[in-house]
Length: 605
Image (tube, rainbow, N blue to C red; front, side):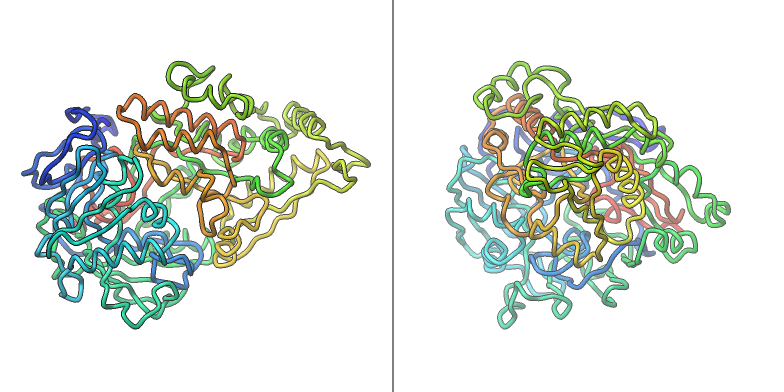
């Protein structure tokens, strides 16, 4: 992968630097870092990450708003509703992921890493200075216990990796070795990315049942200092943090407090920002960004607006159809929903047509599928599955385009024709199935999202013209998680953030084995041998060319599967914040991503 540095000045790409490529699987003995292909771009004596300021002052606070609530402070287990940032802010792992090199890690708790030529095993040396927030040392026993416990009792995101570990053992008092049972080059990197917890904390406590009663002890630069269930969580900077002088951590964790405030809906959250109760927010609607940020704190310069570029894929954001349910098992019905969704009219109403639509899962990146028929290695990878792929996977597929008018006559006609092909017909103004029953489905929404509600209201108006009257169910955040964890919905909102370094997590998102696992991200319910095969190819590719072709192939399979009704993408980030909150001039290729805000920000009086 290439290293790309964004510079804030002029919001432009300032340069490209490719890491030297060596033969796949070459050993990296006693290295400071590990990369999927080739060597890490930064040398062994690097002083800090390029997007961090090692001279940043400490102090100040950042306060952000979240819609919804929480009933757990343990982000490492399946049970409970946990704010998404906690696992990034409180967890610390053996290695840290570079935001400039998508497939490269550098040492954090580990002072060195070495791996076999074929990556069948990997070893990590634990930094003897590493310690938990209570001052106790991080030991090999803590590392082994953390992997075993997370892999068997932890959140589903950790289990897929653990199933591929043949053995985990202590080589000596400072070294652990993972031996793998699967040919998968990414496993050596994933072993460096699991959070390390304090074993003795859980001697008399049920790990999988903990909620607000137990705060996991970790070794990171922040600790949960105070909270009020459903209202706020306050994290304080640990002044005795052990790793402040680790190169990867220099210039990280500068703010004295990170405070997460919780609100019942988006309107209340934005009002809190306007009055100064919240001092940093992300805006996803360009129309709001341009018209509603003229309040007094902006006018007097206390707050400011920033445009932050990035090189990430668009990911997939929109309304996902649950193909486990009979109502959406037929791809023609899913295509009919896409045709009935009047994106051009909705985009004009919501953003003034200022935001482009997501066109595929990896659009806005070199990993996205190309227009037109599959060619080259992509075609070669897809051809063995040609009989099972849906129309468009090989020939080429693009989303239906509406005419921009409210009635969307052509889109409605196309949707009606597709429903007829699938065996439905309109009888007495009602879309009716072959069984004589009305065609209807439930749209599950989380309380507080006024934007999603507005989009769905316009979508439903179009469906009504077809004789379809879906039920809209709006539930609180806890109920929403409970229902989506067990896939109890027909259609719902989902946002899948995808990276430039897709790997084993794709099994969690799109793999057949995860389709029926509770708490997974495969809300669409895809179970495709072709998709599974492309994920295997991604994980076993010996060249970047094959890796890219495998991702492009997977992108075609997913997009032509018609599981999502995509909305608009965000190829930049819009951040508004207190002007005293400051970040370095050099922006990483991943841009505004976990590990950047609030991590490398600081308070400038």
